[in-house]
Image 1 (tube, rainbow, N blue to C red):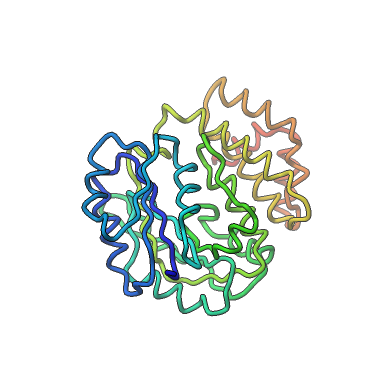
Image 2 (cartoon, rainbow, N blue to C red):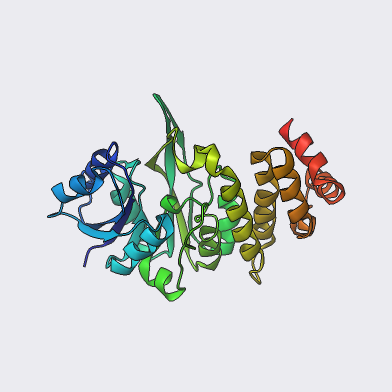
Length: 301
């Protein structure tokens, strides 16, 4: 049984897939399996996967989206820890080695740092450093970081993942937002290392930058946010984070779409979830309670 299962959803990634797979095969720790889910690609992605068929498990499925691809990859995984790698990104060659050092205490989650790649520009976003905190305590530290919920930001202990029956919601954008905060909060033990092991490569035509899908993205985000707010007995930081995310998502809309979105989220009375432990947060909470639209105008400035 391998120590790590690396799950790579693939959809029309012929330009980047070779680099992604080579970065995995180049790991200094070789105790892993690679599971690639071909999500109905119509380009040469499957041909590229077949070049590596001796070294990877290939799952072919009709185009059902990233969530289903990840879920199906998890079902085939046998490693102690799960990692998700997007097929247009790459990982640093010591990522598994660094994770392995802190895996001895069997944390449910291991967080690591990121390298943002935007064209020729690279910038490191280190993770907060802590060891063996409960999920609720870990969330308080993670939420202060630039990134919280990308699925590729963590190694997940598979037994913990399966026991809680975690699944990404199908047919949704922002599927990470709908699951990862829950995973963090439900973890008994979380460890975070500073090592920037994941290269997040920003693409001009990726899901996150395609304006034609923008309205569905925002509505999917709201749908999942409502589900997250229904969780019981989580820390106040969790609810405040979810509420803040829902509110600021309105900035991605314009005109009638934004007005309609704000009208919908008013019904959630989100101000009641917001922290008010500092003067700035108290003012913010009052402002949002009075007018979300006004707050967003101030927030943009």
